[in-house]
Amino acid sequence: MSWLKRGEMRLAGHGLRCVRGGREVFAGLDFAAVSGEALAVMGRNGSGKTSLLRLIAGLLVPAGGTIALDGGVGELTLAEQCHYLGHRDALKPALSVEENLAFWADFLGGERFEAAESLAKVGLDHATHLPAAFLSAGQRRRLSLARLLTVRRPVWLLDEPTTALDVAGQDMFGGLMREHLSRGGMIVAATHAPLGIESRELRIGDTA
Amino acid sequence: MTALSALILRDIRIALRVGGGALIGVLFFLTVVVLMPFAVGPDLALLSRLGPAILWLGALLASLLTLDRLFMADHEDGSLDLITMGRMPLELACAAKALAHWLAAGLPLIVATPLLGLLLNLDMVATGAVALTLLAGTPALTFTGMIGAALAVTLHRGGLLMAVLVLPLSIPVLIFGVAASQAVIVGPMTFGAPFSILCALSLVSFVIGPFAAAASLRHGLD
Image (cartoon, rainbow over all chains, first blue to last red; front, side, top):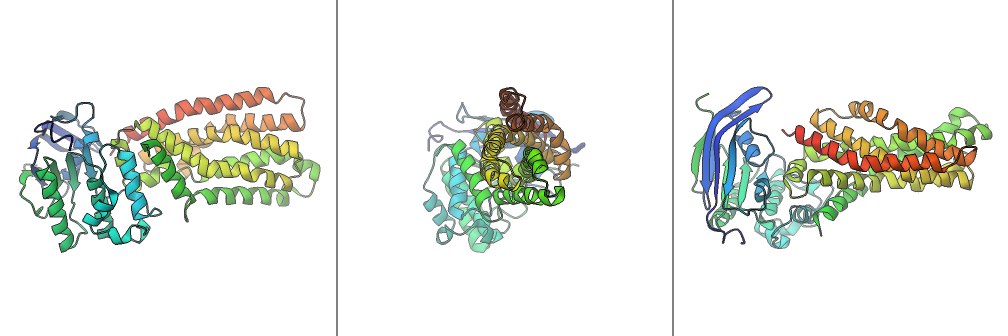
């Protein structure tokens, strides 16, 4: 873990304002997370949980405020140190499980871990040659999780990560998150259900 | 494998798999050109005079046929988010995707041209000239069409909008492509002048296309 040795990291946003489709989703939002900490973003539907994650990932441009990662790799942007796991799984149905994972590992670059090992951890090692078109929703989610394990990045941005996972899958995922945190990573997760790990709560949109 | 070659290989692989776009373009090209003699009639002299124009029109429409999905497919399954977040500049990723599309969907058209030339009563030299102009000109179609494909994602509209946006941009390519082929077949113009302009159009599109497409995608971030 090259980024572990760089000391403690801190991801912080100040006075964030998000406008989508001419409507203000939230304003004056502050948050902070440090290495080894999970932040559970809670709020009703439409309160801007996904928007916050997309702001951090650089997929939305904030209408105001700043986001910064202190103590990360200096030459990389924040987005390049984040994993974004959204509603959509970023999988190609025509490619096999193995090919999908290998592509993202090659494309995302950086420090790489054994793909076969990641697939075993998420319980997909029996299906490596199966085209992704034949996977169930839960299996697709597991394959997306394998991407987070194969390419190591310090910040995980997870949008409703446990949807589609069965009970055993949620346990497995809890273990993976704990492992990530113990290595000094951080997690920002938008969620309704409890994450299954110790986390700090960030409520947004309650004042609106 | 580098990120660049990984992206190009992935797109080619998807295009060649079942349900991919590569074969559809060639089949469409084949259909258009095969239908044409039935419409025009059995006048061989007329057919060989119209031949280059028919081949060029067929190739133009065939190469645009699958182009609107260039970014839309990645947008729909979330891949575009990760590509945008990646270390590779978005411009380079756009260029890689366009190159992959041309290799999978444009190159087969050129390979099919000699066969279709037979149906249009074109001799070896004329067929060769058309194939050469297609080789020089179809990259320009793909790289300018990419701008329309990116706008289709930004504006959440595919299909027809793409054709309306992109077809006017392809007029110069069509004019000089057909002109260069006709120069070889009937003269008296030289082949060199229109062919050079065709090559120039391709080179310009290599520069403008990726930047315009990336700008459009960034603007449409949502």
